[in-house]
Length: 386
Image (tube, rainbow, N blue to C red; front, side, top):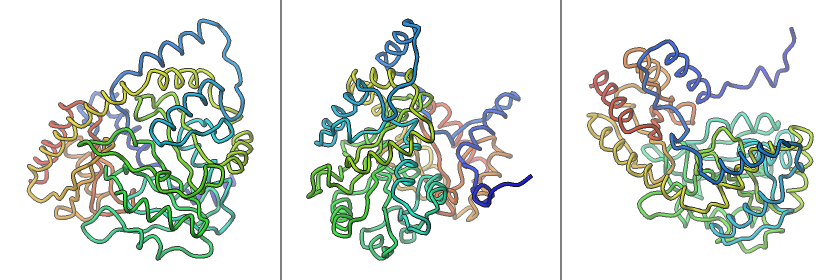
C-alpha cells in the first residue's frame, strides 16, 4: 500500500514514544521510574474545573469560532498584557488545539517549499519534523562544545536569503536554560532589520526559577504589534498543568493571524469548546496557581541537581526553568540512544536520548514527577554507571 514520501520521511516523536513505552511497562507491573515525561503531577486549577462543569451542566457543547471563543481571547489578551506589556486585540489571537498546532499554523502560513527555518540546539524534538511538514528546510545552530546556549552571532551566520523564520524556545526544553536579555535584544534587532519572523515558543515562560524572568522579545521591538515580526506562542499545558485539555494560542500581527485562521479552519475547524472554557477559567483565576506550581518545581529542581551531583562523571548546567534537566553523560557513553536503552533495560528508568534534541551525549531527565521518583531514578542510574 502506498505511503507518501513525506510521511515516510518523518520520524516518530521520541518523547511520545517513550511515554507510551513507560505506560506499557507499568501496566505489566514493572517498577518503572519515568524521568522522561513532560506533565506536571498537580491537579488542574479550580477555575478550569468549575468552568468545565458549568458548560457540561448546560448540556450544550458545540462548535466555536475558528480562532477561539471571545471569553478565552479576552483572558489571553489580559494575560499577554500582564506578562508581556502588550495588549493584543481579538484579531491578533488564534486559539489552537495545543501550542504545537499554533506553531504548525504559523509554519504553514509563512514557509514556502525550500524556505529555511532556523533554530538552535538543543531544540524541542518536533521542530525539525514540523518544518519538514511545511516543506521547509530546518537549519540547526549548535552551541560550542560544553555549552547549551548559542550566540546571536552564531544564528546570524546561518541566515540566507531563503530564511523565513527563527524559532526560539526559552526557557528551553530540554536544557532548562533561559536565553539572556542581551541575546533576545540582538535577535529582535536582526529579525526586524531583515524582516524575518521571530517565533517565541513561550510555553514555559511562567516556570522560571531563582527570581529570574524570561525576557520578552516585545520589550526590544521598535514596531507596533500589527507591524511586528514577533510571534508569541503559549498555552495552558505546562504552567497550568492542563496537558490533556490541548489549548495553546498565538499572538501575532493581524495579517499573519488571518492566514493562520484560514489554515486552522481547514485542519481542525476549531478547538474544543469544553477545553476553551476550562482554559478561560484557569487564566481568569490569575497567577496564583502558576506561582505555586513554579515554587514546587524549583524545589524538585534542587533535588534533581543534588542527586545528579552524586554521579562521578556527569556534567550539568543547572536548569533555570521548565521541569527538565539535560546532563552530559558523554564521559560514560557518547551514544545517548544506547545509554537510554541500557538504563531502561538494567535500571527500569525512562530517559530521553539527547540526540533527539540535537545534542549527542546528553539525556533529558524530567523532575515534574514526585521527589521520590527523582531520588530513586537517579540512584538507579548511579548504581548502573558508577
